Amino acid sequence: MPSRNFSPEIHEIMKREMAEMGSFFIKKQCMELGMMPDYITSRDIPKLSKALSEAMEDFGSEKSNRVVRDMRRLINTEKARADE
Image (tube, rainbow, N blue to C red; front, side, top):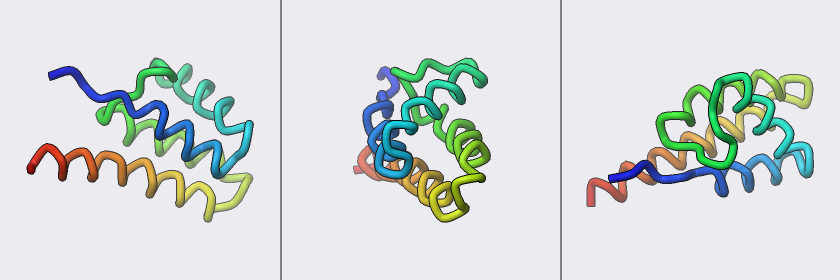
């Protein structure tokens, strides 16, 4: 079974937290990690959420913590669905 693409949800999370800058953060961190910003799998989320959190530190820990929490929640939700 192919890996699910979480890119739309991650872009939405980042847009909510960082407005239009959210896409820039995703593209830059994906480029540095060797990931495709338009196809982010559950295996990419832990590394990407950490990188995004670190990149967002200047904007406040609340924002970066919410991003990490919400991105990791995507994985947990997907695991729960797979267990059903």
